[in-house]
Image 1 (tube, one colour):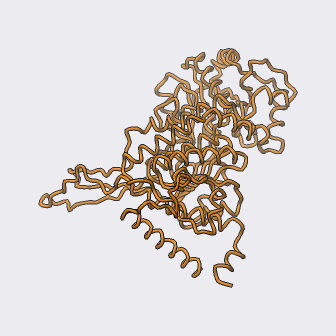
Image 2 (cartoon, rainbow, N blue to C red; image 1 turned 135 degrees about the vertical axis):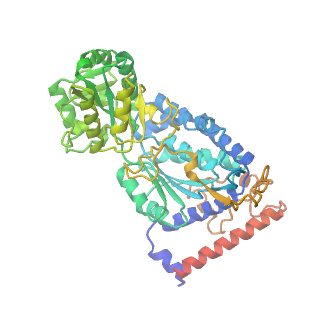
Length: 534
């Protein structure tokens, strides 16, 4: 028995599949890294259009599969994270070299390479779209690892984007997906040295696993968003914005408001406006029943993630009107022992009255100490001094003003970068301190000239090291005994192969294709040698 055969018998289940996916991804990354800007733009646009065309289908599927959220709201997110993302970055360029004659520096963009994208159950398709398109924009390739609760819809969404990208000229394997997530498989993908970076969106355990993998990682921590309303706010508008935000997709976004903090002088007036917008104020005994329902053992009961206010009220034995959109749960002290001061991924909003703005700021800081540092906060006010003091005091990296936080901090109703991944920075133990953007998946080689005025700077105008790919990309060179695994590793055979562009094709090979084949052979031999040595 050979050393390779011994390894296959003794290694954990899922490792061979992880190796196959990563080898395919490396092949795709090598080819894709040579594409020019026009080719990349064509691929990105094709993938985005394909995703947007199925926005409603996937929204309905996601709600059906997970039981979370609202179809109409997921449609909006799916469109925003497909064609909306392309529109947001249409003037950005992560492919062409750039140069600064004054500084005498040339910068050449380099893709991240192989990206492992961990996606959540709460915003499944939107996150698959978002991360996949960011990778395509930067000529990176992606392996999508969906949450098991949403694996069906995520796998189909990834395949849709992958097929559109390949049809537009991308190499096979540019987008892959884990069809059947398992701990050994995901661990093998995270820890393999061929994974260049992990982008993790999910719970604390998922993010910590990514950071402890030994590979570079971008992870985000949990949110627990405070929203302060002071006496200068437009109370009617504030009420509408808060209820709209807290009820959006049944409060499943990590950017949803968690605790409403209001100055005592205006709280009765604010409550009247909140009631008109569909907020139901829980009496003390009703609040206690909801608290016990949502936090039966001190931890949030996941059965209520993304469920609507009427359902939660009914489960607690509370009768509410048919127009009820959120439940207001008043409490006195923002302390860790109060469950309602913790994050709640459902339309239940904690409510705290404070005597003045300074006490309100203290309460907001306390909310963030429980969970959520680095994430986001909101304020409704027209007083610049208060807005400045609040923003300087809370330990977050985005504060939105006079807008619902769900879509405000995610950049959909503000001019922040549109995102499904909120970087929490050092406050929240994250490596990224802003909304995730394509620039975080690109690196730039800096070519710096001698600073002496006697040394002239080169004329790089119009020059690029990348090229437009000629003809169809050759298919991934599976070994003959692995071809049957094509579907198993996540991507159906693309149209180019179905049309006859395969290993047995009679199409003549160009020098570029022959050179690529030689590079592939070299990579395969290196991998086999590494396996035998290991």
